[in-house]
Length: 519
Image 1 (tube, one colour):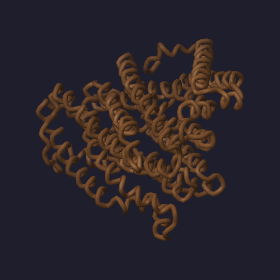
Image 2 (cartoon, one colour):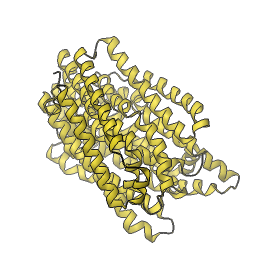
Image 3 (tube, one colour):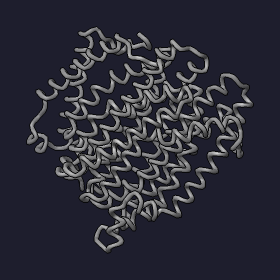
Image 4 (cartoon, helix red, strand yellow):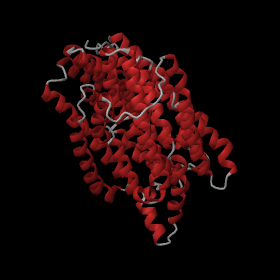
């Protein structure tokens, strides 16, 4: 079991790494094209809303509700019953998402006013910022249909994941990045408003991702004719689990959307600064946190269905240790190397050194919450695999309300940086509540060995930070060097940090390449 988890985790991480690298290339191209001005703010805004709904309807709540039920059907029912469930789910979900997509396209001005309140008020009062509201309304009409395509992409990915084909769904986001990069290079420069070309890139990316999954579904005999099945027993269970999970699994996304709403009232560039720092946060979160969560959910669901209590706990322990091993150095590295990474990746074209500084401040704040974000991704599946979506919702409500309070307290003195600090604080609270719930129910408790494991990893992480600070070039040197020199220096720092971290781990008795579940 442990070797299978590790192998699956490596597959997902590898595919996700390719996707995230292309995502960075995409962001570099976009940053070079638009920097962090008003056009960039509007594009990131128009892209964020359908992405938020994607997390609710597709990759987030739906997957957490669908995978455990589908796993149970595959374990206890014949193939025809499984195919029938897939068909009913596809038809029911398809109708609902089609309605939401249609409403979103028609009501894009309402959405732009709702989530971009600052721009809407400027438009009402005929102030200069009003053009952002008009442009956002138009771009949402183009980007919103992405929700429809990515929902079915997520459905296909969930089916393939339960059958152990993790690489396909993990690789699929590559096509979205390719589509946006192509739009930025070939379409946007030819348009008076280049951000609209990027919006069409988002639309095309959704179409290609959807089409890419179909041949693999055919191979698995899982491409079934969709049909309405609101009262199908499996669909009833999925929607019963999904309705509360719509909120619970997407607390961090709701928090980020609240950040966007408040940032629309702040100085121009706030949304872009938060976006660029969030993108660097998503890199390790996707490669490590989401990858680990993706592979343990089907495993935990099987353990629960087959009443393997001990194996369930050991699988959770493996997930927590994996997050600690990979997440802690990633968090420290993200904070220490924030400015060099932003310089190397984005500082060219319209992306200035001032933009680097402004984005680095929010990256410090987001980076401090990376381990908490990753822990949420790993702890939440323990509930969803047991078909318990109500408990995470309670914790999610507490975390989201707390985030609102933190936003109010911190946004006034710290501006957009306060929003990032509030998001990290709410993630820490959410992770703490999730663990506390599992502990009280006796589902999972951190072992003494895992605590010792954490102390050793923390010591290695601190040694890595000290080494990086000693080796760090001065600010003047970073600015004087050309991009290639900066990139080599950054790679050297990353390699040095990794070597220091690995050496201290080995000296302390930890062998990362031999990590096994429950050991």
